[in-house]
Amino acid sequence: MSGCSDGTSWLNDTYLRQRYLALSSSPTLPAALAKPPLDGNQLHHRVPSSHWCVTLDDIVQFRRVVERALERSAIVPTSMDDFDPEDDSIGPSIFTVNQQLIMPVTADFGSPSWALMMHPDGLECDLFLTHCWSEGIFEFLDKVMHSWPRRARYAYCCFLSNPQNLDIGKIISQPSASPFALALTSARCLLVVPNSTCSIYTRIWCVYEAFLAHSQGIPIFTATTPARDASGRVCTMLAFSVVCCCSSLVVFHSMYLADIPWLAYVFITLAAMFTLLSLCLPAESWQLRRVNDMGAMMCSILVGHCISLHYQGIEYGLLDVVSARHAASMFALSMLFFVAREVDRLWQLQASRELCQLKSGFTGRLQDARSSAETDREHILFEIRSRHQESAVEHAINVLISAGMSTPTLRFAASCGVDIGGAGWWSLAQVVIVVSAFIAHPLSHAILDHSCTGSMGFVPWVKFVEGVAWAMFFKTAGMDQRGFGAAVAVKLGVVPYYIVWTIWFTYHLVLGDQGRHTSCLPDQLGAFLWGPVMLVASLGGIGSCAAIPACGGRLTNSLLHWRLPACRPGSRWADDQPSDSSDGDEIDSSGNSDSEADCPGSPVTPRCGPGRG
Image 1 (cartoon, helix red, strand yellow):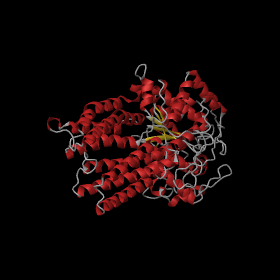
Image 2: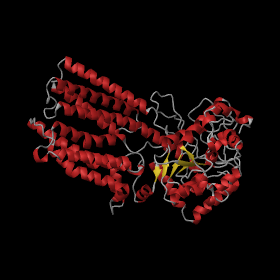
Image 3: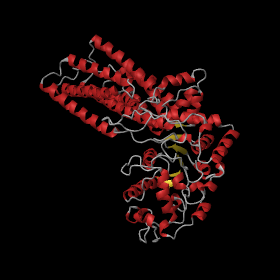
Image 4: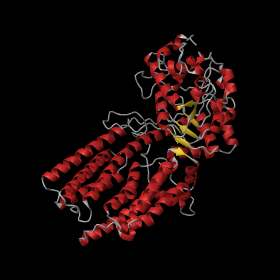
């Protein structure tokens, strides 16, 4: 084990000496690596290909290995991959990393794959990663780490799972018996990793993997990176809102302005206006960020106003029929709505980037997919066509690009005429609205005694339980059901409830009724009508709704409304390079719309060694 080649001697003082590739005789070596070098050929014959897998921890540590290799100049730019060694967001291509890191290191251990070098007994695959070798290694690893499914344990990743120093061409000569096909038989989901170079579906092996997943009913998901600056924006908005609330409290209290009714009317009107604008403006609109900021500020000012009323003993000074404490909680939740809308905006921008990456160069036809080995392409297309699955696979890929994922349920909904564009994403603002209307609102009514009394005093608690039940459903629902579940909860539960509440509230306001129980009737309708409808529709899911005879497709389309910014050639969504914008979410307007399947600007490289396209 101490006979390390010069090309990998830099690994001696890295983290891997204790965790992975300790190429010296250290007593802390993992048992698998403390043994003599492995025989890669025998090992890969003994261990089933469905067990050539790595863990999430392996992925995390592999990133550290690449970082150290770049620091020690063990990975250097080439004429075919002139990457920036200082760039930690894209990095060298996977092909370069394979040539300069994976192959030399695994050769020192008897030429197994990186996965079996780490786990000689193998780990059974339950997650399959599909990608194109043209992407940067950091781009790939960061997306996988961020999108790793909760229940997944072991992943098949071709450049880590296949023995790169052995005869890859022979191993994959028959597509249906290749390691990829065998690993997919035990996988529970397939994770598609887009890249900023070209659509992975311009490569025939990626198409073949989509074909196998579709044939076996395996859900396909898209890997993403975290939304740019989302956490920073949330912290900034919350801090600003707290400052506005405290300033409002001080000003209203010290200047005795809290009991001037028209001030509340002005701020409520402005908050309502910003709410409508936030819901109507598209994510790519630069005004939306300003609207969310202003809406959060108006709501924070109203929270301070209500607290000032409470401390001055003017409990019903706000519009006469709403207590100051209840109004303060309502406006605080409204402020959180604007924060959630800002998060949605950043999520939508990031999702649009991934959509553009999957579309770049993809014609929608399998026959246009390329391979570095023409025989691979011919064998794969023949297998797909012989099973009459060409149109079905094209449909599955188009569903993936439109919805962000491709599952049997979404493919069925699309076949029923449902526009599933963006159906794989859900809105945080919608979740906040549902929690506000069916959890926070009835809880506040029950605690402050602002709803039904006497024999009907249980009504707000029924509504509260329905809200908790919906929240539990949302947390446990599949990713292909969450977007629909949030949308129907808002449209069939929250909107009708607030319409009735507003009409009833206005009626009492006109009458000058300052009673504490004006929310009883709206809460009754929410508990016994809107809540059950919301739960039934959410639990039924998009597939059940789409299957309704005659009107299922139209009804489902009317309930779904999550849409992503369009990816158009020449638009700022057509490329994934950030601009100098201070917002951190603008995209270079170069409009890269290259349509060649071989990814112009990058080398046409085998995807997993010789013959892998």
